[in-house]
Image 1: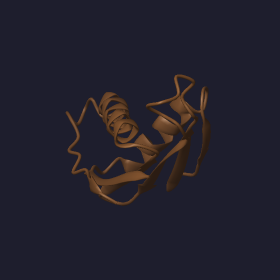
Image 2: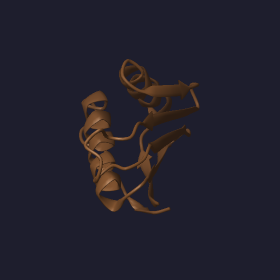
Image 3: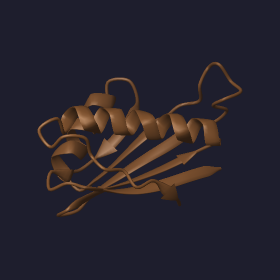
Length: 105
C-alpha cells in the first residue's frame, strides 16, 4: 500500500471538499459532510497499474484542507495526487493554484 497526505492552505476548505465530492459522486462511491469526505476509486479494469481500490479522504479545517490518499501502488498514488490537485485547482480558480505539500502518510 502507498499513501500520502497534504495540508492545503485555504480558507474555503469545506466548500472545496463539498464541490469535489459532489463532482465525483456521479461516477464514484462518495460519502461526505461539510467537514469530512471520502471517495473510493474502484479497481481499474486495465489491471496491473491499479490492482485494487484506492481511498481519498478530505478533512476541512479553518485554514487547511487535509487530503489523504491510500493507493495500492506508487503509480496509482501519483496519478491520484495529480487528479486531486487538478480538480481542486479548478474549484479554487479565484485563489490561484493551491499549494500541495505531499508527504508520505
